[in-house]
Length: 362
Image (cartoon, rainbow, N blue to C red; front, top):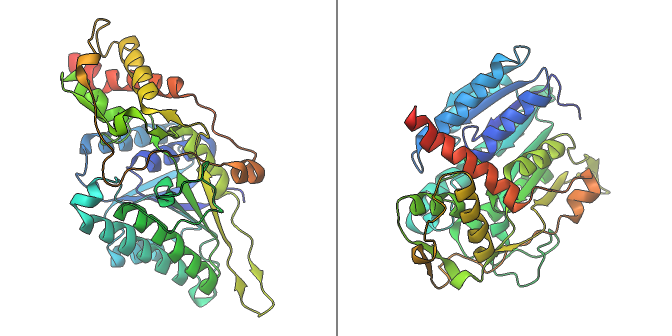
């Protein structure tokens, strides 16, 4: 599928991955019509979301042949979702809107049910009805899942062929539910859909609740950072640009519609991992982060890191390792994430200095 001249709806478009996807599409596909929706909630600093939207506006100045429409609202508002589909008739839908965070799902489960279950159901229903009255409707639904669905799986690397029936957080359970719901709708209504299990996404203008970002905030304030499982956890850190490249390639290749022997649709449904395929220990991650914070001038060269680190036990909802088997992604799209952790953290620390320090000093 060629994305040129397509109408693309991206939910969560002020979010970390969603906004970067919008930027990438505007940069590489033209003309293109993009509709974004985001509720701009205060789960984390809204000024970061506003910064991302301003980046998109700046990009539009150099791409007048394309269109960008932003709608502030929630996908849990069914009437709003239906009105967007009725007015813009998107051909590709990329659902990035979700309440993120493993630990926050323990404190505020309602937010996950509202956004991740009800909101996603509204998207599926709108996709279903996009075919009403003989319309061609949605050609491909792409949605964000998570490596969290692997839960208590012991086998690594995690493969999409593995069973994922042992979630350890409500967040993980909602993401697994998304996959099941999408499969049912693909079967019932022949909706081509692809789920993407993301592995520990990081980069500039990311989410402040993620470890690399929250550690930086705490170290700058002289606070102590807590490293879970005594530093023995490993994470498959994946740079945001690699994630976005994977999403864009998947968008272009909807699963093929086929009819089975019973005369009913064979679900046009796929699941892929997108990860760096190289887990790093948290202690190694923290060591690289502190080096890059000094290199970027965020922290001084004589900063005493050892007195600001504390090793603590595993926390509820956490898993000891995440590790993506991306063989299916490589096979079907010829793509493998390649950004090293040092390169990615260098870009983050340079952005952090500019966003929080250089602008303040101007």
